[in-house]
Image (cartoon, rainbow over all chains, first blue to last red):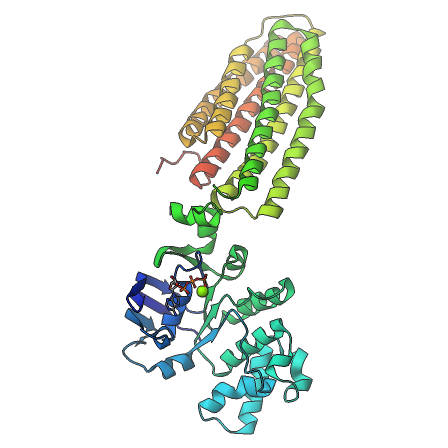
Length: 252
Length: 224
Ligand SMILES: Nc1ncnc2c1ncn2[C@@H]1O[C@H](COP(=O)(O)OP(=O)(O)OP(=O)(O)O)[C@@H](O)[C@H]1O
Ligand SMILES: [Mg+2]
């Protein structure tokens, strides 16, 4: 099941550059939350703070509170523990190219010490089914490599890989921006199905996509969260002029 | 300014709606003038304007639909286009009311001219003022002005109700005047409908500007 995420006064830096400023918001469990905003506004930095990936960039640090359920991820857990609970999917599908489809999905479990074939088989099948990829690859699980399937399939493979470790939170940073409309629709359907079981945070530049998949949307601008509200409110009647200028395309 | 083409299309949509509104206002004005002057040629002009109004309605609808499909408008733009689509319908219906009035006036022309206990010109003036104000509010994007239209509607409703009562009594007392009274009654009702459409337009302007739906509330919200 998903967990609530409560972010309080989150700040992030790359070296001396202050990139996120006092971001506070509540991301509800078992819903999809979209993050929008112009390039460079800090969306990726923000989601990378939610699984403690931000701090892996050289010179980068973060400060503030991120509660996942009752765990303060910066105080009560190690980055490795957090990344088991928080799956992440990136803009460009990044399967392990030489590994088979099967091994791609099983990689996280193996890393966590699972070896039993029966368990692995089960998880791989369940995850691929969840990611709506099973039917397309079930006959080639160990024959085909992660790189030998289409881009849209690779992205669903990455989602399956993220789901295999049974996370509570799924972070998706522009998961469909490199995909064609049909693959995009599949990813969106997937988000729609998955959000009853996970807390989903999706960064997207596609307003219609945010509108289609997310109950809530946050608008970032220059490292600040300008507005956070139900998606319908953001897209029909935002409170902040800057949000309106951005979503109507009159920015700048 | 970016999205220049989109902005131009929005301006064009607004302009076309205003051209159509001009035709409709003229039709209403001619129909009520015809009532006073019993000028049948004015009635014919009103009837002739209907196809043009209908054609404009379809064109505006198409343009709005194209913009929704092609530009994916958001927020204030989305609300604007939705308002235009609704106002478009109201304008077309107002045109129909003008045609109805013209029809009644033509019928009245075949009947003896008698004094009727109803001040149609005043009712016409009031509903025309509502239309003007609603359109002005649309032109200027002025929610407060739109709000003032909503107040006028009660007056128009009251006048129509009075007319109904007075003409009903007349029909009872002097059944021989029933044909004229019925025509006047229908005209009064048509003008009251014009006021209703003006009210709808005003509500759409408020929705567009403030992002709030004020339809179907007996009392208008106070402003932000
Ligand atoms: N590894 C890094 N080192 C230094 N600065 C970085 C690094 N990554 C991002 N930044 C800077 O931090 C700011 C926020 O970047 P971020 O990637 O979070 O933006 P974004 O909203 O995800 O943009 P986009 O929509 O283009 O993906 C930008 O000014 C960017 O240049
Ligand atoms: Mg990014």
